[in-house]
Image 1 (cartoon, rainbow, N blue to C red):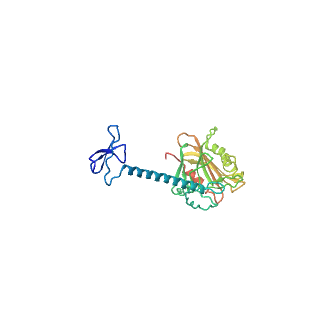
Image 2 (tube, rainbow, N blue to C red; image 1 turned 90 degrees about the vertical axis):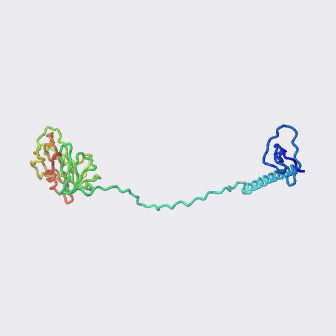
Image 3 (cartoon, rainbow, N blue to C red; image 1 turned 45 degrees about the vertical axis):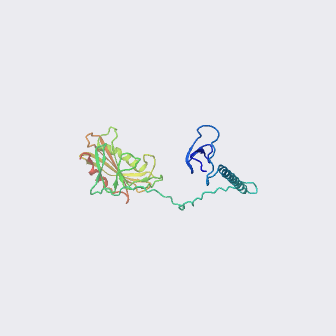
Length: 304
């Protein structure tokens, strides 16, 4: 006979009650409402599992789980034993990560790679269309002739321009020289005011600094052996009276050169005397000697 609908002990969870609808178990469950003796199980329904069957199945599951655990333990133990050699040293069976071959290296070369450095401009203004170089302190400009460039690095102060390029100085001391320089400075306050006296007093110092011993004590041309006055006289500079003295200097090393001191009153209104020095190497590599006259004739006030 089929039990009537009602709450009965759940065969799968005996601590709960489950609703029996008269023909089958539903999914409705609850805790027992009143503590007391266990609610009797309904009579078994044909095709439904009994409590004994459920307990037997649960015991089988537990036994299988225990057997599996024993088997896993045995396998692990055997792997550990087999992973050791005869001397008792444990063998590391952990897999190692495969590494890719390193990228091929460039073959070493004896010649180091140099970073290119920017070269100076080769498009300097020509003599037909000269630019000008300004001496702001003394209020004058000079033409930048063909083959001459503005200074970049000089240990000597007051250099307005130089010839383009350098060469190894012929003297004993290592260094680089240039074939020509133009220097402009305010005349020293030594009591002399006339352009002639200033030019004559300056020419020897100008020659020594150019061809005998420079400001750092080197002798790039081995020293001056002799000099000769080749030209001197009055000259008008930017509308002011001036005077110049030119020497031909012979040196122990190299062809020597020409040095000129030019003195005149500043056209800037200060009337302070100005000294302009020209230094040109002699020989075929030196600039034209006529450049000295071109510079002098091209001196202007900065306001012109």
